[in-house]
Image 1 (cartoon, rainbow, N blue to C red):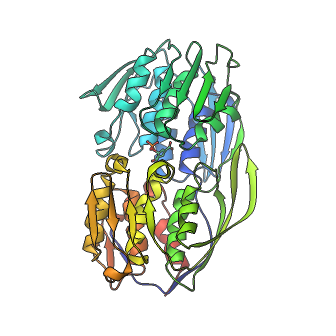
Image 2: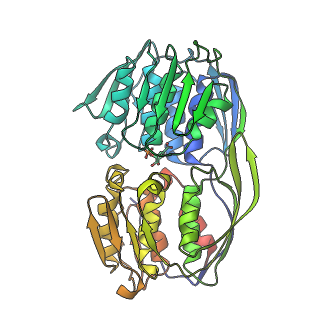
Image 3: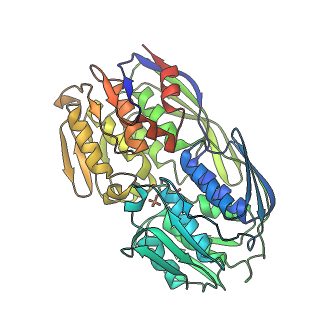
Amino acid sequence: MKKQTIQKVKSINGGIELPGDKSVSHRYGMLAALAEGTSELRHFAAAADCHSTLACMKALGAEVKVDKDTVRVTGHGTHGLRASKKVLDAGNSGTTMRLLTGILAGQEFASKLTGDESLQKRPMKRVVGPLREMGAEIRARDDNFAPLEIRGGKLRAISYAMPMASAQVKSAVLLAGLFADGETSVIEPAKTRDHTELALEEFGANIERHGLTVKIHGLNNGGGGSLKAKTLDVPGDLSSAVFFIAAASLFPESSVLIHNVGLNPTRTAILDVFLSMGASIQMQQLKSAQGEVSGDLAVRGATLKGGVIEGKTIPLVIDELPMLAALGPYTEEGIEIRDAAELRVKESDRIAALAENLRRMGAKVQERPDGLQVAGRGAGKLHGAEIETYGDHRIAMAFAVAGLAAEGKTIIRDADCAAVSFPSFYDELNRLAER
Ligand code: S3P
């Protein structure tokens, strides 16, 4: 339960390389464990969440060797997983729990899957529902929460029109679809990140995509029978880069070069939001590998206008909303977030956590059921305060950045929770801060 003290800085300057993308690392770790042979996953995420995924795959019979950020996973094929002797622990990671539930639904053995206090409060019905439709037997506390007991087996292919825009739900159904007896399709109400589709293709699954529909052929039904081990490079995490984009933008003299960031088009809506608010961001050295685009981002200080974020943009920037909201008081017009009730069931109730902590720092905030409105610069300057993170990594990092331009000290309680996605966050922020 360590605290971090954040002081005002003059600017943010220098070069930075970020840990590997969390979403991509989860998928590569899971699929490598289902493939035949040893996969080498380079620049794998340092995030505690992705190491929860690796620990689960190891407990299910894959061999996992971690050497700094290179992870070697040896899988024994799509039928090579074995029942875990212990309860599988997804830690704080919703992605681990939801995606793994999809895989476990297709296994001929029973599994029990749990997580930390926060994860045990997050809704799982959204994946349990469609996986039951496919034939899996799943028990959940109050029919919605972990611990989950999953009795997998033969699955039937379904066509699933998702009631919500969630990459995790889409992924759980597609991963179960690998083990189903035909062609499983998922229809999204709005676009979400497509790393699962790209990773499945990369490991050799048979995937088709048309607009908002994704189809997967069951491995034994036109899907090619097996997945092949791969050597893959994980790009840097754009969602982590956003804290440095925000920090640099706050000070006119900042200049930051962020190297090798994942720029998959289903993730870059956040850059469009920043650019529309007047941020100075240039993409450089773009390249593409394994379907994933990456490049460098050159960021300079700017005067941010602020604006409204809503509708179909929300699922594309869902993880970046805490940072955007916390920038609100430094923008000309403030920031308004609508249509984002989903934020209430993330690692914390992020709408409530944002409203409370912004007010502690002196901001003017209106909290709504599906978002919040944060007044801009005209409503007064922010001052340092004690920040209650609720154990949520993105709340901790968002307020560490907000604290860089506030008067006086900002104290982040339980600051270590940043390690869930970005263990070296405070060291890197300190290194780039000019006082
Ligand atoms: C993720 C999807 C998003 C996101 C989460 C990671 C993923 O969740 O918030 O941090 O890797 O698929 P939802 O798809 O549930 O919105």
